[in-house]
Image (cartoon, rainbow, N blue to C red; front, side, top):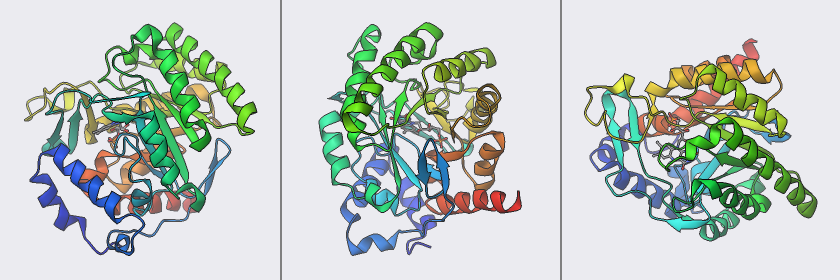
Length: 349
Ligand SMILES: Cc1cc2nc3c(=O)[nH]c(=O)nc-3n(C[C@H](O)[C@H](O)[C@H](O)COP(=O)(O)O)c2cc1C
């Protein structure tokens, strides 16, 4: 149990503009990480090991991509009890993202809308930060999430992903190919049949060369959207298998506004996350599990706001789960609660 209850910090953070609160939290974590003061917010890590895609995960709850886009706070975030952490999305070149304001809280719905647009410092700075972290040496799993620059035409997207793959490969336990952010124009079109086939074919080929060069085959996961029908999910599943991808992360944020219509900020453009995305995300997970069979790794993400929500993802077919928005609304205690509830499932089963 951490020394600082989140119930005290939350009103202060929610009094700030969401992006300022985010920055302040990350800055504090970055400053405290590696110092004795880190114990003030640390949670013990629940031990519930699982092997997935050839990797040993110490427990089944991870941090979703996008909270630490520049990989500045990996060691600080580790203190919250995550078994695995995914950082990024990183693009080859640094870019500012969309104009502010671009992140909104919808507290009545326990949700966020963001249209950050892959604001990040670029691959070089990202890798320098990853290299400084000691997280991997301590037996935890680090995922590095790659995307394309906004200025790169969508026809040339593959080039950006290959630059990203090559850059992060030596430092990753797994690499995530993010093709599902709604905030980079046309990015989600990469999920459609021919485009996905071309992209994953190129990634698989480059990965083979990198595996030879580095003497290590790094698993590649593909992150998809919740806004897909069953036929689209089926096509994606077949393409993932055809190119021997190692796992799928389901899901990113949704562009649907059904659950938040009429709420303040409900019509802001961008991706909606948190409670309203749970159902759609679990539906996609279930469809993926049916299409991919029992053994294919599925990382479930979207709307985990409680331990029961985390359990619902495992029941829908996920092997492990990730959290982002739940951390903002419920605080770090959610990580341990979710990990414990999932562990209990195994002992009951
Ligand atoms: C502010 C914000 C920024 C995000 N940035 C990224 C990103 O850069 N890359 C990515 O793959 N997902 C990103 N996501 C999506 C999350 O990783 C996650 O898939 C989604 O929010 C659903 O999970 P949640 O309901 O637990 O937040 C972002 C989400 C939020 C709220």
